[in-house]
Length: 165
Image 1 (cartoon, helix red, strand yellow):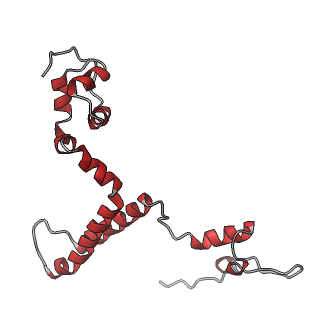
Image 2: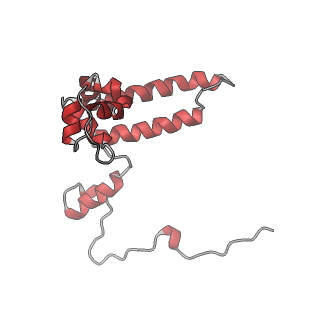
């Protein structure tokens, strides 16, 4: 490793990681970040050694992250039945935990694929019909001069509730 260089502040580990992934040496990273030693940069990136040793693995993961999440979701959901049959087990995930993880991974996968994470089809149909971009049959139409009740069902005449003591 190279000679010690006087440090100035803390090492920006995120930036150091990106520079290392782009192929710079520890010494080049130290210089780029303002005069850190190559051993200091190496120590700061120690937690990322497995990733830094294989930048192509990181890039492959990044390019296929949605599919990786699909595989994890499939493993979670298929193991659910077996795990629910086991009453006890140290380190086992509960069905509740697995279903929660499945939902989170499902949403993340949809985000990565630029798909919605909420059911917005009704809102989309209304907006499209309003601007004339969608089929008019998806929203109710009103003829000119027709009287329409505009009070939603939940705001219609309030009825007193019965108190149970």
